[in-house]
Image 1 (cartoon, one colour):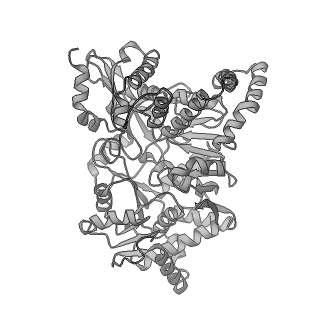
Image 2: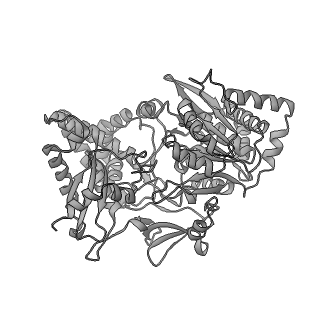
Image 3: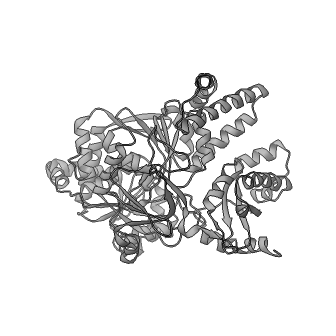
Length: 602
């Protein structure tokens, strides 16, 4: 495996070593279906040769939009097998953003999941000059639609099978010609401050991350993961491409985004990766479930949790755990935590991962205490997903772990984190100016501010451009305060305001599900989400949550005023990225009047 130069060569090697083993599972109408490595490779082979017959050449670009499913990987791997480059598109992207990615990347083929995504392509295809073919995985609703650009995925596979029969050595020859320096994908960044930039990731970047991460995160063919985060995001690709093609573990594709919790219980994976929002949801569900439990169950859980917290205080500090606490934790685990993990689908999870955004340290401590260890990692699209991560044993709360083996890390004079390693991207597509800035001096400039301790653990302070300097000259890191707020089960999102202001304020989005339950339990009268945010009881509830946070932070960081937004933040409205990162500039502009109102008279 260490001799392969490209991801398709890696797939060919692993499929040859274990053809009959299960590579992935898909769920259709409640039934799980196994797909072996041999079947995986054969489908990729047909996609590649079908595209070859359509005229796709080495270095051509092919866009893909769809939910996580085997067809996504068949398409991406088929594209790369030809030496072409795949470009992922978020399913939630509106027409204009899809058009930007497909047009800017100069894609010649566009893979679509279904009629909904195909309709987007119809809306912009006349303005994307390079686009020649639109291939649809699920033709439901399009069976009787005829268009010269439309092709079903089934027809592509049939074309690939025929091409293979006519020239059985063709694909092997093309795959063998692949070089490690070849670009494998263009991943468009979330674009919090402007149009998305297309980060070019080479095969050697993907393979290097896979090899180095394997030294920290031990995985085998017996491991199982769940695939539900967007596959066009580098975080999901770590588990579905980089590590999958190293360890040969089983990837389970959820039926849809609404069935994740059910599917999790079905599969009971050994590793589970999610973004902070998911972990926050699980935490809120547990906390509120226990709040509704009987007096006896609450007492038992609280006692068990107290034991778990004490046990992990010693464990996280690397200290010897007293015998009485080890015995107590074992009892708490058998009586409470084991059953809780089974209900969540975490009974086999030996390690959880959180990435793509900062997570509250309180959330990490909570799950650690109930027997679900979570490791926070750090990385960016431009670093092919990982620069720092902790293993199962070596972990320090408040940090994102130590750097991958073979990495170099430097903290610039202004505190910015600079990285050099084998996963650093090859530059931004058609953007030499930003490429030069990002790679100035031979180091990748992350845009994040942090510090490295004496043991090599990295602590992230905040995004460099997001740091707040108050009117009094005090530096405030907004993400830290926002994460403390989001630890509350009643707060879904928070945006800290205060740059060049006399004091700190916040815009807060309530957690709809949990606040509605609170309103029902306390007989609060409301009609809509907006009216709910204006009720005296809900404002008071959130004020109490803000007070809890204020007691944990320095006085200069205290939130003096807040306002509840009367709507959730949406990608479509330009308020958050598809990975749910807040677009602060957009928020400040859209809610400028509300922000100014908090500062009037002070």
